[in-house]
Image (cartoon, rainbow, N blue to C red; front, side, top):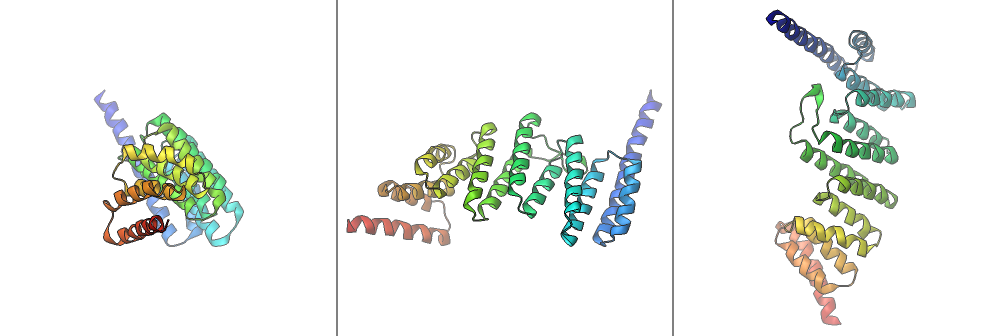
Length: 270
């Protein structure tokens, strides 16, 4: 029995080293931009270990770089196919999922960008955010890291300044809140989409819930102030702007002070 265990342990070490050798060689030639040698290594790696997780991420990197250098859509498709196969075999590999999302963002394919995020959110309810990362290492603080990254993806949509993409941002926020109803960032992001589309009544419910969860969050408080200001409820707007001031640095506070002054001057004139 001891002999068998030793053999298994030896094989495990050998296989891990086997992967590492291919991976290190690939990374070296990737950094040297030697695409011929990269291809040779990938083909040999695929013959020796066709379902190695790092093989799929390496193929993905190879094709994405070729796509960036040439604009060849076939390289783009091959990259997507490889990473999708990797996700199929290793659904807990969050780096693979984020790699695909990154690629869709790179080419501004916002529909597939959104779709891939939603698929990841749905899957997170199945694996309870027990994510793994590069070289199958456990991703510590999986839930916190996952939700924080999703917030950044939503901000990427927001920063396009395209009003049509507010619907994508809203779709993602609603999906996150389906599984994580107390996620303050998503409540705030959802409300922001309603503020920007002029749907002020709809934005209040998620904001008021976010306030209960995070009463000292300046973003939530500022969004409440802004909403009430746009609704013409100046007293409430002033109240929330003044509350926001308590949690801001000096530079940010100056902007809020101007809003308060403007509201008070309007009130005095009327």
